[in-house]
Amino acid sequence: MASRGSLQDPDHPRYHLYIHRDGYGGCTCPDFTSRGAACKHLRALRLILDDWVARNYITPFYYPTTLDAAKNVRRLVLNGPGSSHSSGASVLHTFLALHNAAGEDITASDDNDGGEDAEAGLAGQAEFPFDQAHSPSADHELESNQDWIAVPNHAQAAISTQIQLQTEHTARSLLPRLHGLCSLLQNTQLTRSETLTEVQTTLNNTHLNLSKALPPLPLPTIPPPAHVRQEIHHPRAIYTSGPSAGLRRPALVVVHVPSPEPRQYRKPSHSTM
Image (tube, rainbow, N blue to C red):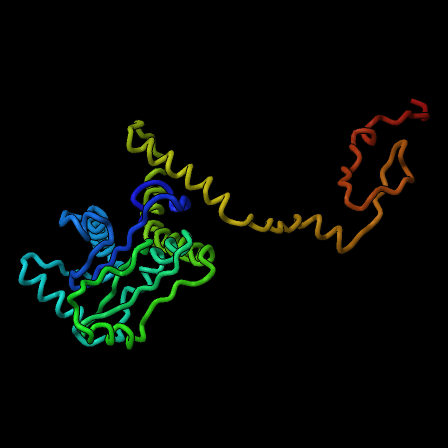
């Protein structure tokens, strides 16, 4: 996680965050490692995880509320047996791919004591900050774990895949509400408000961004009218009276029949009264 600025700028400091599903976590920033202060980066990561839990993207995380509970969680995470469960690990690919785009090579692993687990990581320039007091068996368990998540070499392709999946997931959740909103707006006159103006602006921006991101749709093939299809399959010559009589016209030209009025003129009579 970058402290500020853009991930594309290598000069900004980056920190490694990790958090276990049972609540054990840490950060490589100076406030957490040496100053004994609260870590805003870890707090931000917890807020992100809580939002994912609220959206049912991942299963809930447990955060210890007492010192004894925190020590017990740390002991279970470091010394507990490894697990082959990787539920929720796919959600972490975005973090790993974003870090790899910044030029780092980081991996994250899953560990838990007989349950579903996931370690969320945002990689930085420092090493994984385990305490010096952890037991050697913890290293053995981590090395023997077969569920490591390796960041792909092509970071840009990984980011594009995650954006595609996240966009489709968000669209599937929003489509029913958008269809309902579209039905409500049919044949309705509304008073403009800040909320409706923001909705209109957001939808317009979404439409523009989708037009830029998606390839153009193929042009639909519109069948010709029935009379044109008939002329195409059965071409025939059309003749007209008048100055252009005797000239062959194209088969697709629609020619109206002559007016019957000239036939109704009174003919001269040569009979005697």
